[in-house]
Image 1 (cartoon, rainbow, N blue to C red):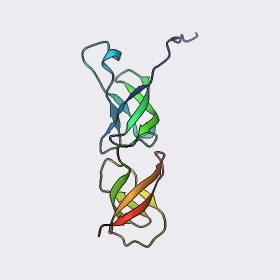
Image 2 (image 1 turned 90 degrees about the horizontal axis):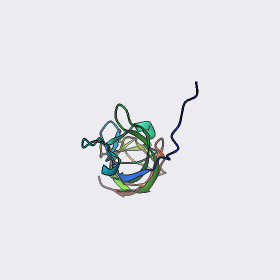
Image 3 (image 1 turned 45 degrees about the vertical axis):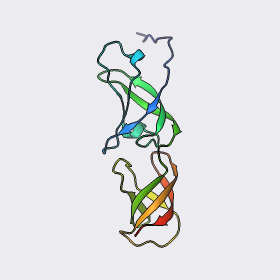
Length: 138
């Protein structure tokens, strides 16, 4: 038996993503897309964030509607912030912002474990975060 598909293409949803401390994202579903007055946010699992961070403006593709709307980030339109206060741990910097769900690999320099630094995020694809220390805080 062949499955039928709808010819209507899915329109991406754009908005500001909010993350939980577990690294799960939520994006408000546009009012025009809801059939009922009860609006549910689109849930985006950690694996589907594609490097999106809390407060980023993103484009999301809705991948399912039941039991709740699910989606995946297809594009990061604008970063909310690019500098983070971190604590050095080995060759990584652990962000103080608990909604930044991965440690940042830092380039060069000698830093002591436990040292506080300001790190500029150079790149983040959801798997590997790379950054540069821009200031020693203490």
